[in-house]
Image (cartoon, rainbow, N blue to C red; front, side, top):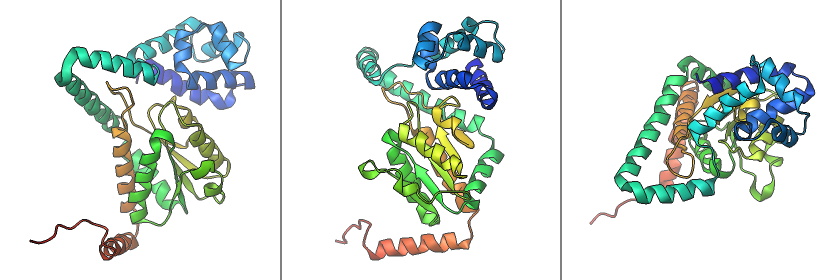
Length: 294
């Protein structure tokens, strides 16, 4: 585990016991790692809305002699991950793509994709993954939330999950309405949130409400420092590095498919019967294209 990930994990462990001002500082650090790396402590404190000494105090709480030592951890992380805005990434992609050619860009994309997938399988404990699936199996209702770029993936999770069980509820927010779909969420339920940095605000708010009402929250995200990870009971990480201007969702797709698969294993024989009924109804409704015989 990198120094940055170790620091983020330690910060999350300390978070519940921190005074209010340090909680504000810690939240800012988790949500804005790029600012910690590139801005002065004075500017960071001003942005976070707390006094300057709080960041020195939190550095010492994390085991660093000075804030500068802590900042260096973030600086190295930013350099490694090239945190930047989408329009800047697109501009760099156009310039690099013209210079290096299609073959090299394709190979870089291939390598980043394989690296993301390898990282998932190397990092996730199968027993932990099975535990998350059991939490879903034991739940009364399973709400699925994913906004912005994650919306289509939450829809995919709902589509395949809905074949195996009628527990799944998709929180889409049509018309800007998010509260209605989760009106009945509570203890005994679960919520799957799919969100990558920068996290959609609605996804974080939904996760917060779910936990406040006693539901278990499972986050599929790209970093333990992601805001959504702070409000989850279980976190499944999918690295999303890509030479293109947008993050990769290949890892998220893998986690969704595996999670629904593990969930289905824990269901009764009714799941098989349900899938069989759905298939029969699809055929009856003529939902699939069939080639006409000559």
